[in-house]
Length: 590
Image (tube, rainbow, N blue to C red):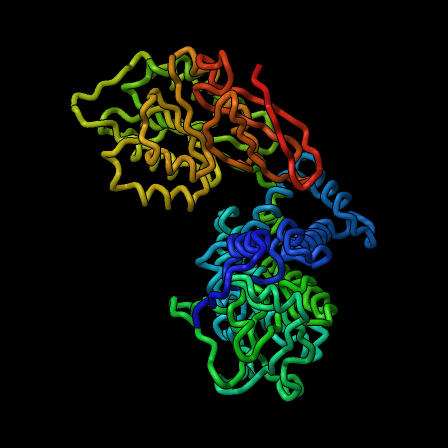
């Protein structure tokens, strides 16, 4: 069954709401991924994946610390800060908890991002087994077991970044079982203990030809009107819509969500005629197919969850949190307390990279590169400096060091060497970027001094995919006023910038802006926009921040930002955030 089309609504605001929902969430939605979406869908007091995951991590962190400090502290001390301070003092060479607190927060944030991506990224959002939808319980259990073992193996191999990403996905899937199945409706007050722990197939699953639900009623006039908006289903009011025989006989079922696929990529169609349950929610096309309504307990919002009894959401969230705690403890047993704490950033330096990819034929265009290299001043952060030199069609192997002076000396030597290439081939800059990505840590910054060119075009899709996999941020510094826009695509998709250096003496100015935040492990690009205006035509850009953002740096790049700025095309502003959902800025470069 495809998405239904209906007459266009009279209200453009309603259509905007529909588009907003469609862009934010992929098929397979679960507990609301994070607090921002929680706010947007009006489920203000809902328990999100983010809340459950962070609560569970903190509880298991305390358990791991208490195991390590057995006999060193009072038995009734369960305060995270006190335990972490004692652990740092006894096991981490006398360092303090303040030295590791940032790493701990970063690790939790990386796990939560991995958790949220399970819904937002299409490849995982559409897979029924990763959300326990469409009665894919055997496949879901298989995924949990396999991923738990992979996470443990990644931790043992010190691949903590990938372990956090996959670990977040693992927790998301486990949490979805309690929201998407009828485990709560059966009257269970404890978790399904085998999930993700032992190779045991869930039993008593509803067969394909068994009816599991009955129709719900449309929730009044508002519910009907919402259903008139293209791509949205009506709002239903569901109460006891799972057949009583199903719950009384403890038959396991879950809802079907339109657009989902199995583990082989084949579309899963809701069986016609036998009235299987739907997942539910205004974004689920199957909400309007027999049996109409839905059984998910993802939120307190009537747009998201159709149950009239909202207490089921709290019960599902409580069990999901407890199950997450249990699974984290199993992983802790798999890898040991020390490695588990390192998985959470405690006792392990954060490793980041800063890479320079330099076209040797353009070295004199960029004056005094060595002075632009930032010094790492962050505690418990190990900064790898990487240099990749492109000499015509030849790309040298990356030079790596943790010594900033050694790296600066290597850059300075480039000016003395100059280009030594004897061929006429254009520089293989894309190949140089590939080498820098492979040599760098995930989420690191790469500065490219030279133009990406058409001759490397056959690698274009590979480059975009590689950037997405490693989540590197690429900044391109060029000396060209006629660079084809599409050649900048990998840079802009990565969240980086393209900076035109019109004269060699502008290099230091541009780099002082770009490198000012490159070694901060908590930096991220919040918003990127392009526009063309004039003195009589203002351009307004809007972006949102929350209380987790402590500082916003706004950078402008262009040739005619303000009168008199042609020779100085960069402006920088540092502002303190206002804790309001939106922040509006009218900067002045005077």
